[in-house]
Amino acid sequence: MESLDTGSKAKKTLGNVDYVESSEFSQGILPTNKDVIQNMLYLLQPKRAGQAQRSKEDAAQLLAELLQEHWLFCNLHTIATKNIKKNILKMYEEFTKLYQTRKQRQNQSFTEKADTFNRSSEQLFDIFCTDTVIRNELEQYSGIKMTDVEWKFLENQRSERKMYHKDFMDKKEIKMMGRRKLQCLEHLRKITEKKEASEVKEETYKTDEKSDEGMSVNESYVVEEEEDEGVPDFSSKGKRKRPYSTWTASSPTSAGDSMPLECQHIRMSIRKVRPGFYETVDKFKNC
Image 1 (spheres, rainbow, N blue to C red):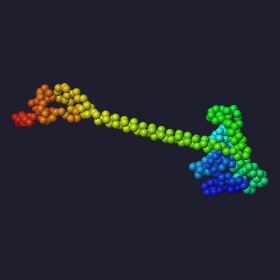
Image 2 (image 1 turned 180 degrees about the vertical axis):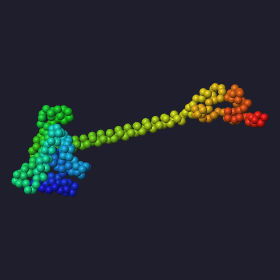
Image 3 (image 1 turned 135 degrees about the vertical axis):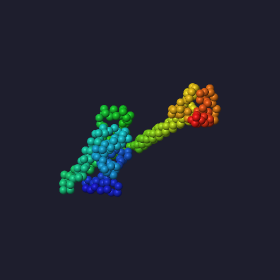
Image 4 (image 1 turned 180 degrees about the horizontal axis):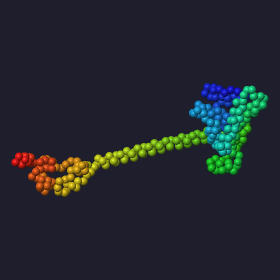
């Protein structure tokens, strides 16, 4: 017995039979015991798993699902996935036990067991659902009903294995196209959602910007104090309300307009004192 990696594929030899790792099943026919073992070898290789090591449980689960799918392509219903997984693990454990037997213990009994195992490896890995009630429920659920052709095909795969399921490739291709279509639709949906979200965000920004641009300074603030007579309030709040003062040094003011009557003899405007005011004040100081 030996275990080596020839090129890119690992190989294990039990007796005179080589078991070479494989990533798929032969198309149009049902997998044998040997096919299942070779797929397990593939799934358990660290470089194939894409991680440090895939467990036997995980590998058997993946393989059970692949086997179910393969049988359904041939219009054949199988036992439950968990039961397929158990059968895979049981057979692989038997293979591993025989393969790892030390040379000192490889007696006549071992040789007979290895030969028996190798002969059975060419037989069908049978996972067909023999329970009529459950099979009828599966046919109703999936819409796949077995015909006479499928029954003959199954019997042939259990014996001489010369028949080939001619519709296998068509069904597999249809399913692959369906998966790709779903993937494309999902991708387009995500792109559309992202584009719509971007457009909504941009529209909201433009609306806010337009609202800010359409509002002038005078529209933003309503100055009610200017309607009242008297000196306006020039607090910080008042300044925010009137960024641009309407009283200038050069604009004339009247007694009944903005400047109170009692202030007109002193000020020309709210910001400018009459030229003679300070001279008059100096004269009073010098008296």
